[in-house]
Amino acid sequence: GKDAAKDAPLETPTGDAGGCGSSTDCLSTEYCDKSIGDCAGRGVCKMISSFCPTFCSNMCGCDRVTYCNSCYAAKNGRTTIAYNGACE
Image (cartoon, rainbow, N blue to C red):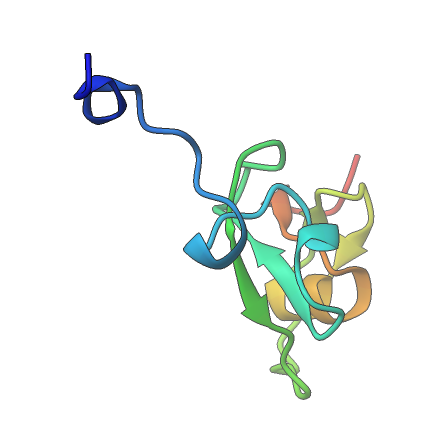
């Protein structure tokens, strides 16, 4: 009926609604920010920081590269963190 759209399952938001599957869905100055460990999930485009904190606590990025922290993963790899600790 005419109310079918209302009853349709919610789709994953895309574009301006704030959803991204990878950093290629974002502007070149942004990365797709996701929860730690949610490499294949959806995230939100966030601006890449110009400056990162200097502390280094080895984190494995979703691109299988070890970064000092999530800021450097975003800045240098436009990626997020797969897990804490150096990549195996």
